[in-house]
Length: 190
Image (cartoon, rainbow, N blue to C red):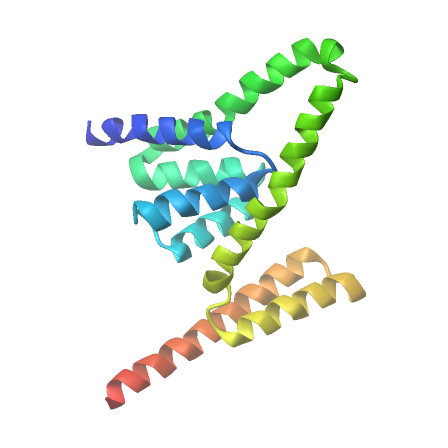
């Protein structure tokens, strides 16, 4: 019953996220960071990064997967479904209304101006998410090297993304193990 009580606030919050989502999933990640990491301290930057990483690796859209994973973590299956439904409710209603009214709005200068203004807001929102997650994603200096190496292998040599994920996971495990042992040695010596 306690988990059921958690579903309503999750549904309400994700409906709000869905209402103010322009620019795709990364803008929602920025909103989740502000709400759940910075203000409510429910999860950490690392937790959000992990949820986002897993959400990107699953089939489907990154943000619906991330919303489902976050909700499941907070309140089980009903929490996951609450977050997912909340995320899609506002865009669904909006797109249904726009589709219905499309012929009336097509070519309207006010609508064109409004959409241009919305597009201008996307870049700062995405930059905010990127800068906020940068510190969590690249906790150790070699992580930047792995990211640049992966990008270069993909762009210039056409290495398959599957291999890049496998190589990145292996290198990530080695890097984390090295730094954790280094930290443990440092604390053990103190």
